[in-house]
Image (cartoon, rainbow, N blue to C red; front, side, top):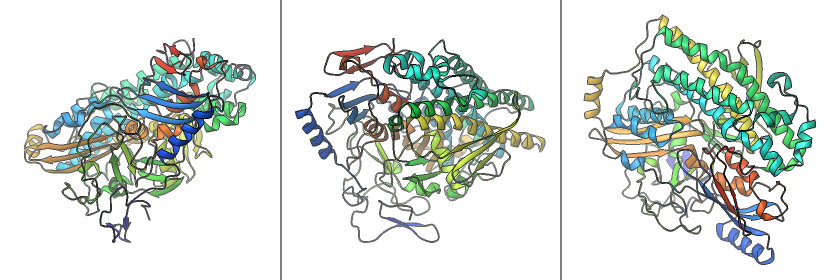
Length: 640
């Protein structure tokens, strides 16, 4: 069985249907996940601790920035025991792109939705194109798919070093470590790096110095390589982050042999740098684990992952929901869901029908009848006849309702997305897990899924041809997220190399058409178009979906679910905390302090930033003993 919580069963032909005997099958009181501690029990536990322990303090960090907006985190910490016992992730900013898109021409979706993020607008433009072209039956020609893949390879090439060196990396830099854990610095000066022959740093202290914001060698290299990948993206899409060339049915880019060669020249520079990046992020976790085993608990979570897959095969992708599973499973990274480390499905239709969003603790009004019966909802089934929940994006209505913050009631503009009513995590590294486990990767010369890892062959550059392997880790935490992002950087660029070689083959055969219809044909097609579509794509932070409903040539519903929505989600109807919240509560407090006023929450910040929320800025942490205030414009989280 694919679904454990939802009353959905799948027959031998792969068709889903509701199990009988449930009058309200999707009611939150009918299909209940296993919850180990309710919110009421957790609150009562905290109240008992506060009564007898003056070291239990409420902490408020506002803002901790995230993708295209602000994020705040409320925590309760036991400073004596060194642990967080409560956490609430808050998204205080309402962007409203779903509302803006209502009533628009479907072609507007690629331009407006890309503004949902100021960091990775290309992926939103692509997801919008996928949603609209599915609704309007507009499959792009092979070269159009290849150009999209090459653009998104470049976007991943920008996003991964940005995260590792400009956002997360400074948390492990010399000024931060000396300020928050001075006992580690002498160890770092003595610790010889196993990866020295690849990254060139003799000791961990040398790496920490190189991670220092603005002045560090690795920090500066990160800036340079984000620029290189942006150049690769604009070769095909004109500008970044909000491209104008991505349309339903393909792209409007001009592809020449010169364009491909210029892309190739830049891609070739990345592979040596990728070896250096992986070696650095292999050594950082091993140093911290050796210094204190408790670092394995920082940001720890169960291995519950979802991902839509990424990068299509040009001979497989036909934009249809009828063949959703077939072309989805042929993607370069395999779609799927993993629960407690076990792969439970790779079918995109399963991902879609198991997806729900809840707003009990979000600043929105409920749009269902509340009993899960689905009476009066738009769609009882998907286009294949599989059952849909009233909480599914195609049935959702975005109804913002600003109000006073209450952790017992509503406290965030993020919804609570769940798959099969499980708390799941999104991330670029989820692509590695699911692709490794599924072993369905297209045959190629550079990447192999082994079942418990991804084996990658790096072509010869300044260094000789080399083989590396990412393996499924024994534990899942902040350090492994960062290590996974380093390997995902190489993975994505090798996908790009495979697609570039295919582009050369198409060019030789004269298959250079990049769009299904010309502008006048597309105009006529859209004006009379109706249908529903799902844009299953991906971002640097993982899962990204756009769901569109088109009636009479206009968008009548549009829903976006980003990886940050998933990871920053508040409690759901059963009191299950979202991934950020759980990761903080699982994080020990390991920093050294003489009194609470020195507390910087560096361990919590390492946990949060490993998910890749966006640029951290000025932080304020209230400990009950005055306020700790630090200007952190360089991501140094409180270090002077």
